Image (cartoon, rainbow over all chains, first blue to last red):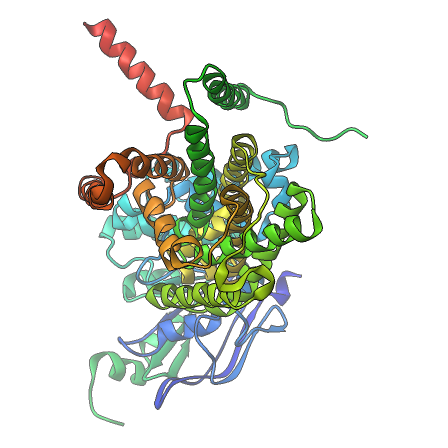
Length: 258
Length: 325
């Protein structure tokens, strides 16, 4: 079954009024692979993520995940199909505890009905215990067990990013999208993050696609790169090929127009 | 048939005991003539206000959808249940339930279009819907139209309003502590993040809105059988009433159930205590509100709720302090 959980994007276009933010982008990601979406600022990377997760409208093109067309499906539906994400500008529930942030993400797997919660039945109590245990487990994956009762907004930046990853993991995703996971982290934190992402892929058997500007991290970590510039895919392949692609060098460093 | 009753733990027992004691205390004091029926009536009104504020808290405080049309749902419950008891002599609890269900359905009908809006826009829309309900009632001759609806039987007692207030707090507290409640909190905190975690935000916003409307409908039924006369005025079922409820909510603290209960009781009693000041009554009342907002911007309890853990902590704190001396 795992083989069917691949992502296939065909001729994806996203227009905002007259602006073509994403223009005919096609790529695919095999199960359990580590991919990265890179490109200069404003290239449309986050827009691709938003299109994949249903947060912005797809103007044309298809997105297929696990043999199902998911373009323009509601965000909560896509989340239930197994695509989880983090955000560039961290979207934790800042006034809630870290543990509650994670418990919310168990939502789609919750079994008990509302009446069971209102009358505090045994079923409700047992499942709530399970949810808490699951959240604590996810928190230990990112090494933040001791923070479970802190308010999410009070944590340092790097820890907030890890909480957001743990929260996404609560969805039991097949595909995890990380939007600039290393932004604002110091070199040591970045190193821990690199190891964490590797472990997640290997232990949880999921595919990870990330957007990142830290090229060292990207080149060390990822097997497949997709380079966007002005909304178009200009190169794709393994890190070596992409690094030496003249169009990529031009997009990043500038140069003569071809 | 054996029902699946959870093991009664100590806390629920203590809470039940305390609640029963309050009830017995009120009746005891009344029997000894220390509380007049006027006082007991104010306490009934306080219970009705608890239901209103706690149910509005579910919508505004926990789900973060700023509604200022809560009196509209109160009106639906008040008039429909009164119509049933007056015209069909329906038993009171049946009338209350029907009124509440009716209010919940109206909440659903209003919520579906209105909850597409956010923030200020939603507030204005709910205000508008509240006024629509009032004007419809004003022009419905079957419930007295502009003359008001009189001859409603006096069914509301301290006992039944107290019981229903407890029931409301119990249901809404348990709702908030469930996965459903967490979904609502997530929507309040960040709707986009909630959606991306699989929360169907429209569903939960509408659910919270209709549930809030349902309980406002119960409060309405108690209200009309308490006053025995309903007038379609702004202060009783319109904008001013909505604002009254909102003031209690904000004073108690958004998202704080204990705060809502305390604020509802205090703000029901304070205007009565100030009756001695005659025409300055509302001026003093407003000054109190301003002072509380300046010194307690997060509500009377300052964002904390009065749970057992906190009570235990403060008792231990006092003990430690005493032994230190």
